Structures are given as C-alpha cells and as structure tokens.
Image 1 (cartoon, rainbow, N blue to C red):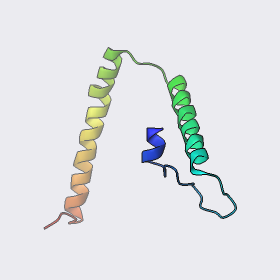
Image 2: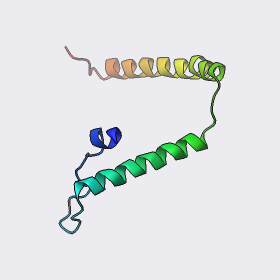
Image 3: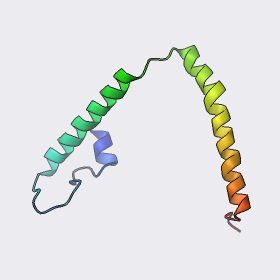
Image 4: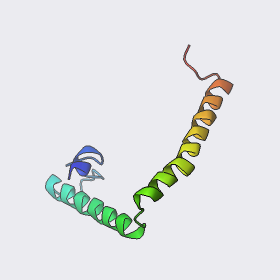
Length: 85
C-alpha cells in the first residue's frame, strides 16, 4: 500500500471523470491489488539468481553498460553545449 500512496496518485482516482464516483479507499485497494499482482507475476516469471550469478551479472554486464552510459551522456552534454555555465 505504500507504493500506491507514494507514486500513482494515492487516494485520488486515475481518471477524474464525473461518471466514476468511486471512493478513494476503493481506488487505493484496486491499486494495491494491481501492484501485488504485478509483483507476483514478475517474481514468478524471472529466474532466481544465485549470489555468484548476480555478482557476475553486475560486474560483467551492468558495470560496462553504466560506464558506457556515463560516457555517452557526458559526450552529448559537451557536444551540444548543454552544460551549465
């Protein structure tokens, strides 16, 4: 329920239409159910990595990708002179 209160509007309805007069507690409950369903689906769909597999994935895949992104973004900022003066 913390996720629904902080990110997607909390008690507020998604569409503020006069036709949909659903109380905020119902909206919040529907959002909680949706995020729980999403969490369970993701958890069941992806394999569970062992600690050594996740460390290898982090060092061999994510570290080079993040360094490449830093170089790319800094290159774009310097090329188009978008750096603050």
